[in-house]
Image (cartoon, rainbow, N blue to C red; front, side):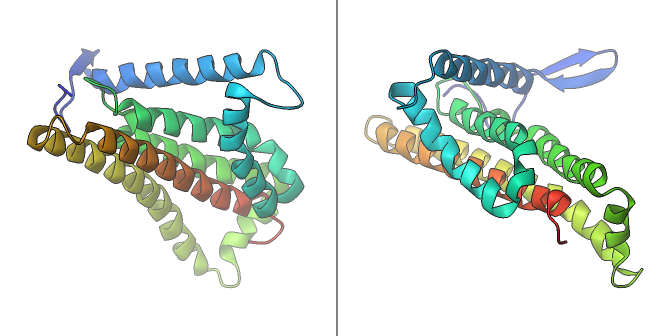
Length: 220
């Protein structure tokens, strides 16, 4: 890997700075997700095989989790949750390729994803329950709204830093091992990277489902 961990190529546009590598890798991730999804859904079979079977194996546990956590209303969040899972998974895997870095190794990406999820929690909650959703923040005591505010501030921070920290730590680990034993470890590190990328995508998705369940669930 030729990239420097934590360093970003900067684009300056209208006085604003953008991480060029993160934006580039993000677009590559979106293209990869679209290519896989379109390729796997062009000829859907009742009895899945090949790529369709692989994708269904990835998505089936997510659908089960949505159903158990949210119920029938969970159908509304399936497109968002599955898209987030696939994006995070593919983004995590990009860092395993030579001279590439994961978009999720940039805190701006992970924080943006986490803030989107928390925003959707409240959007779905308001759309589903109206003012009753707002009222629950003040129950059983009006002072509880302060706890809810702290909770809603901490959630995107913990979600984003957990994903960011694990992915960038793994990229650092890869760099260190490749410098120490460049001809022996690559296969093992690659397997570990795939495992970590999958687990972190699953954790981020499960947390997203848990929080979304608060907006759409019958109880808070």
